[in-house]
Amino acid sequence: MCGIIGYTGKGDAPGIMLDALELLEYRGYDSAGIALLNEGKTQIVKCAGRVKDLRTLCAEGKPVGHCGIGHTRWATHGGVCDENAHPHRFGNVTLIHNGIIENYRELIDKYHLEGQLASETDSEVVAAVLQHFYQGDPYSAIRRTVLKLKGTFALAIMFDDQPDQIFAVRNVSPIVAAVTGDGAILSSDVAAIVPFTSDYFVMPEFHVVCLKPDGVEMFDLSGDKAEIEWQKVDWDVSRSGKAGYPFYMEKEIMEQPEVIRETILPRIKDGMPDFSEEGIPDHMLADCKRICVIACGTAMHAGLVGKSLIQAMIGIHVDVVMASEFMYNDPVVDKNTLVIAISQSGETIDTLEALKFARKCGSPSISIVNVKGASIARASEHVIYTCAGPEIAVASTKAYTTQLAVLYLITARMAMARGIWQEQQTRAYINELLRVPEVLERVLSTKEEIHRLADAVLNAHDVFMIGRGLDYSILLEGSLKLKEVSYIHSEAYASGELKHGTIALITEDTPVIAVVTQEKLKSKELSNIREVQSRGARVVLLIKESETLDEGEQWSCVYRLPKMDDPFMVMPASVVLQLIAYYVSLDKGLDVDKPRNLAKVVTVE
Ligand code: M6R
Image 1 (cartoon, protein in one colour):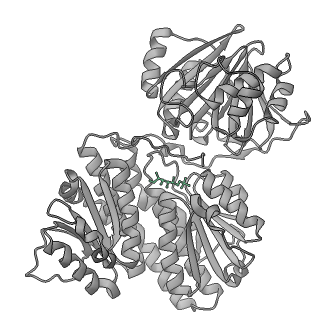
Image 2 (image 1 turned 90 degrees about the vertical axis):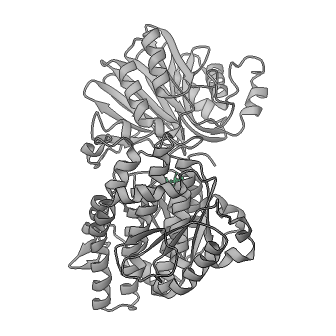
């Protein structure tokens, strides 16, 4: 959470930072601000609101300079107001912060800061402690300050008397840095660096980086110079931008066939699943006695689909645990438990902490991550990267379906490694997986029809989504999508469970979306649909094109899904639900890509 940018060099720092903040706004959009260090003076422009509001302020105030830091905020400590916006300044120190300083109250008392702070933030306290220790040596002040902090932090700092220099230090919260053609840059995300260069490095924790116009230096906390490990961005830069779509969410939904191809093709050799590039040994998949998937939000919903696939094909027990709850349920993981951590950003702190705990317990681990070099990827034994490319809309779409694609591959390789499937079965499964992109293209070509379906829920106050088994897992994700972008209260409910209480909420004003894709569940699901229809609910039904429906029934809203083998029906059904959520949000005139209260990358617990 919170976007961080820092630039020093020959370029126009305010312009560079404002453009970068627009790219980083998905990390938080409660407020935005920049600080410029120019001839020993620091000028700060900041405000509650979006980067476009900051741009307007900058156009009026015309800040100038070649060295600066900038921030987009997702509020944790202190409300959304101008004072709490970053950068924060105390004495000669100006900084921006991502993370949470847990002991900020103790620091206020220890350094007698009560009454001296301009904001309610934990971040300003860090600036004050830095100022307390600063006697002309930034490294010493940073070192001494960091040793006093408890919590997570990514800090970019400027000192008035250190011209053209930006210092950075971090614990848990990420910072990446790079050298540009005319200077040096740091950011919370690779996305802000991609426009300048494809070479960057991930700052190690508890190291101090100094950005200067002619390069970057790094030191460990004892003051020794440290080696920088450079990496290459392998995102297709041409994928940046909205490509003519009004919102990133639509663009990202439309990209799914292509990014699924990119995710699966390199991992299919001679028609068989292959993780040799990732170095995942077959014994890791063959020997585990159980699997524990840890993830949050959409990634956790992908895990639930993975659980159904693996339990059905392999017959071993799979737990899917919300990473945010993992530590509070006395987790039982050991060397026989394969831990699979799933995360688009690779920075979700709950997932990261749960993974680290599982590794301490001796669990072998694989992560499924979209952002190269992210913390979760680095913290796991093996990583399988999804090739979704940059996902900018806060609502996750293409990351989800690429995570699913990887889970199909894992299932197939595991079935092979355990001798459950022979070559022929594995090939048939992989062939069906290879059909997914083309099937999704078919669904996407009917987006106007799906747009019309969305009308059924557009004005609803509450929506229920019902199904069983794999269909229920699909709906959990579909419901999250609708909630987050349309603000309609939506609940995915296991349809067999409705009659145990929740059916009391079904009226003619409660549209119900039902998904029926699994042959073995069809008759029971249709019965549950009739139960809600009998209570007046209008039902939007997503069902395989091959199914016949009773002519006598009232089916006003039916979408025919292209037929795939049952385990793969998740893919077309999910895309329809993504589009329904998108069109509802669009037709309500909402900010589809930046729903209220949310941030793309959740780096606070
Ligand atoms: O980056 P991650 O995949 O770890 O993020 C997990 C969730 O925060 C994320 O999926 C969130 O639920 C999305 N906004 C859902 O669209």
